[in-house]
Image (tube, rainbow, N blue to C red; front, top):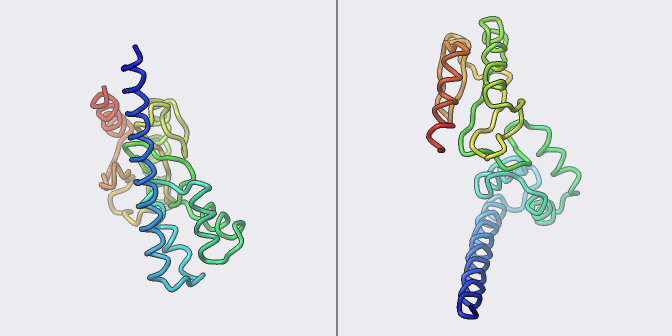
Length: 178
């Protein structure tokens, strides 16, 4: 029994060390980006992009770090991070689905596509499924008006989407997970 408990503790210690190393590397990457931008406060958006790329989302500890490094008030960094839709303060899902709600897409039925996806996933815009598999977002315009209504599935734009087509794609993600 003691050997199992000791082995478990050793594994947990190694896991914690690995996580600390991983966290340090991400902060180092962020610090390099800040240094490359000469600690310029007007490079805040670019630095937040790099932070989100490294961490997956902008957690409070990261925002505080950026604010301290750039000598900006945390409220300003938080304000920029929450103003732009492309920044996320919550972890995103394995898959992302972005429904365009621009004028052309809306006129051609993107609202119906969005409603069908929300109903299928049982989440609303800006949320991630409880299992962390899919995040649902909207965009004001993807600039793909010629193929309206457009939906971005994991970074790939799909045009002329019908609610059924979008639901099938999302169902595929849910089934692949299982």
